[in-house]
Image (cartoon, rainbow, N blue to C red; front, side):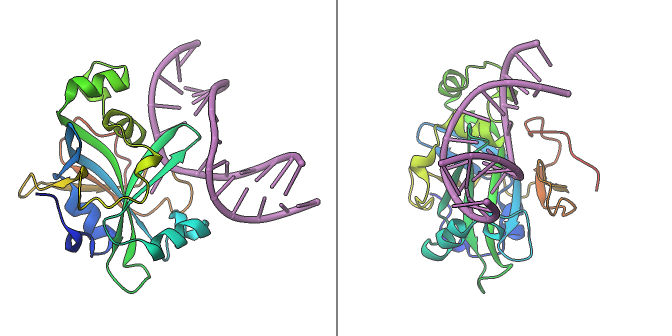
Amino acid sequence: MLLQREFFERDPLTCARALIGQELVAGPCAGIIVETEAYCAAGDEACHTFFRPSTREFMSVHDPGAAYVYLNYGMYWLLNVLVKGGGGGAEDGFVLIRALEPVVGIELMRERRGRHALHQLCSGPGKLTQALGITGAEHGVNLCEGPIGFRPRLEHPQVETALRVGITKAAHLPWRYLLKGSPFISAPTSSL
DNA sequence: AAGAAGATCAAT
DNA sequence: TTGATCTTCTTG
């Protein structure tokens, strides 16, 4: 059973934290989410809605739980989930899926990635989409219906926070969430 | 029409 | 530390 709409009817910070320890499933592959980041539609200069009209349009026409997939640096697909806590302001936004612990379909992930080591398969937002076969073709699809979606997994994971990775604007906000002690995260944590 | 910026990654 | 590579948006 996949996580349903009501899970994504919360603000980005709450959702980003709640997704840690859950499983991301994509067809024959799956992994435990060990790293996410929250982006808020209002008051967050790093969120695409701040400088991209097309992203604001995307938010307005899609339901919570929709996949927001975009090409970064001309090379890598990044997967977000649209969340809507209501109000159309800071309660709405996106959660970026940044890293997984590979669990199912590991051989296929290895083929797609061209890497063998477990910790090199999904330890970054561009890596995990490649490992799971997620591209722009999935942009806009709803993740509550499969074949891509989220499965409940860990009951009470220990979650840590840190600064978001790779951004220049609003870089001081501690909106990165990590599964405590996981060796599968994308980068060392930065101090707050 | 042209340019800049960008939520990355792997090789040097 | 650097190069690869392309979409979106802004400026002329």
